[in-house]
Amino acid sequence: MLSKIVQDALNEQIRIEAESSQVYLAMACWAEIQPGIDNVTAFFYQHSDEEREHMLKLIHFVNERGGFATVPALPQPPLTFPSIKHAFQALLKHEIFVSESINNCVDIALQEKDYATHNFLQWYVAEQIEEEALARTMNDKLELIGDDKGGLYLFDKDILTISVGHEKK
Ligand code: OFO
Image (cartoon, rainbow, N blue to C red; front, side, top):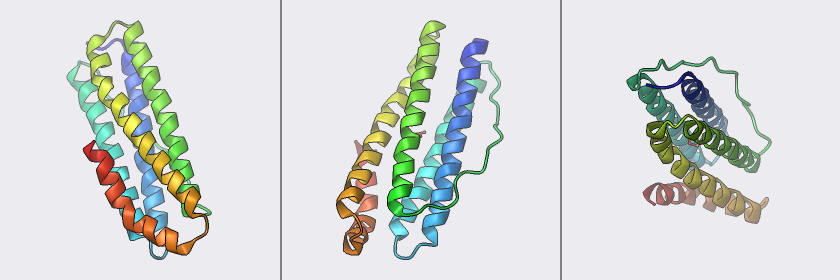
């Protein structure tokens, strides 16, 4: 059975995962109307779907442990970006924020001596390490590319391979 404090922390994490899904969905939607970045678009749509899965995993866990998961209200995310580079900078910033929030949940689980929740959250800890590393790789590449259109073409060509490589690790 979840304590109230653990349930509240997990419900807040459900909200954050849902918000992440919306944030990346908006990035996907914006990318889709930019010329020539079809794979970047696919990456954002895929990332949005993954965040929804992270949310669902938490919802099932809370409900299965005798709690009640809260489906959250969500604000509208940023809809447009000055450039692809800005979108990926926002993605990295968001992932760092999510990692901090997961760490906070882990802290609370330990304080409450809720070892089942602590164990469950380890998957999210590992996932955030992967996602932050992936976001940093992409930001580094975009930094190197600068305004070079050929570089951006190659970035779009490579992005699915880079992200699939990270998923397999
Ligand atoms: Fe939910 O994995 Fe990143 O944010």
